[in-house]
Length: 119
Picture: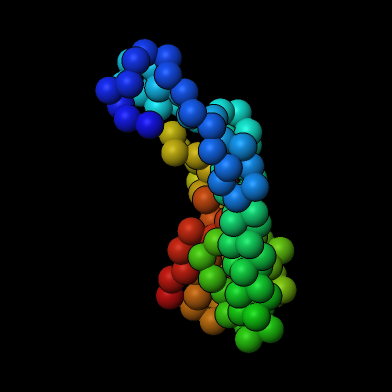
């Protein structure tokens, strides 16, 4: 299909076993609903795969007694134990929490996850 075809011209093709309907209107190409759903499914599967890989990395870090950016409070506790001191501050950017350990390390949380680690 060419972009200079008459307004409202269309064509259907099979991609990955899904019927894709392309409609050219005013030089713009619109994908059919089934194609969008297929694309959304692929994105969701990829996101789930990435999330599983990240969870595995965090689990391995806990076993190695390491803390990583992106960990939850529970994951940090499993890796390093309960903090010796907790300080909280609030600003327009939200609530920030600092966990201090007697070892000299600090863990900073944004809303729910570690945002940085310091000494």
